[in-house]
Amino acid sequence: MPAARRAPVGLLGVDVGGTKVALRAEAAGRPPYERTFRWPPGADPDADLAALDAEVAALRAAWGPVHAVGLAMPATTDATGTVLTWPGRPSWTGLDLAGACDRIFPDSHRAYADDGDLAALAEARHAGRDDVVYLGVGTGVGGGVVLDGRLVPGRASAEVGHMVVDLDGARCDCGRTGCLQSVASGPATLRRAALARGREVDFDDLRAGLRDGLPWAVEAVHASGVALAAAVVSLGELLAPTVAIVGGGFADGLPGFVPLVGHTARLAARPGRPAPVVRAAALGGLSSLHGAVQLARDLVRTSERNAVEGT
Image: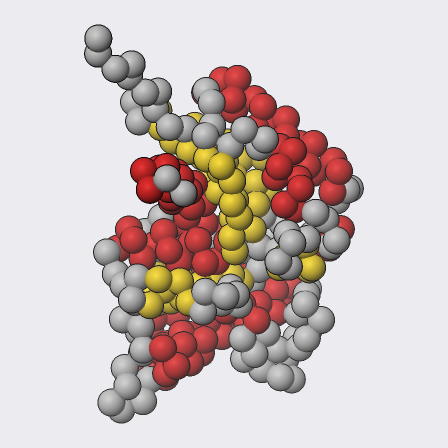
């Protein structure tokens, strides 16, 4: 009697952001499921988790079962899974993230990792590169480092956004002054543009101003590009990666932004030590999301390998 055909394994990636959450589910023989939703107003962790739970339930009902879940998280957590800090959503401080995952995904293999690390891994694998630094520009600035095909330093995430680029610079959400994030993040760029313009600037305003060559937009974006280029050059000096990949929703949405970073980095290189080649993220603003799916896939492979080995 032929063996019963095993149902396709459902993989779910969840990219948790400060203002919105993206989900992508994949399984062999089924179209992928993609959905993005915004956090409910009020920044209440209980309401946030209830919204995520409802979205996952809707995904299961419409698409099918989920066997493994990877979460890309910008928050810093301790060894027990408790959120220590998340400037993008401060109300989550003290949240039992591990317990929340247990409740929302009770029948799935699950794990979470830093969103910048997962984005770096996804982009490196997509590009077929073993040595990559990644900088993701959105609500904050995330990042990750892949050397010899592995994330480093491994024991902790590579907090590229909190590299100090100007000790006398703007105050970062983390409480320190001069972090790369305080200069180059989307909100930081918009604040600088609004100050120069004399009134509020949203992302569409910035894009239009940049397209039209208006000084308040060009100068605000240029300052962000210069700060990112400085980070790329510094990472090149420390780690000698072949490629620096710039992604994230904010960077992905600004025409000419990544070439600006690359050009500035080349000019800042010193003789005998060229800066890493700067490329736009191949996965656009979805690098972390694809990395989360990859984390779910790795969970399944680990589970299958352990089953074969009897561990």
